[in-house]
Length: 142
Image (cartoon, rainbow, N blue to C red; front, top):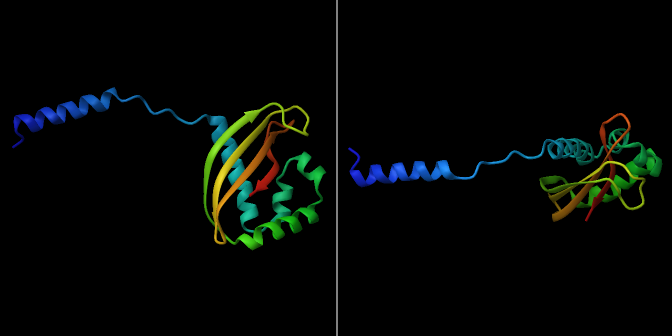
């Protein structure tokens, strides 16, 4: 049997819980670009430079040839080993980006752990192209 003081505390706990501020869902645009960035990174994680180049934005493809990208990806990713964990730190949107024409850009910053580099940061920059699809235009790892 619940005593008066136990019942009173239970009612108080329920009342306090109902006064808590509501949880807000993440911005759908941020969720979309994060998902696209993760899908693209999955290609790089398995060392598929050709597929990651194919999935990239036109600006990306104009900046580096497919075979050179595959080679650069291999040289960068092989020494740090396999992916262990990746967490989104932030997602920001911009209409201007240094060295690029005005447009719609998203920058997704990840904290990443690899087998041989446990504290890395990855930045994936996406551009909304003319067909309204977000595609990767830049990738930086440090």
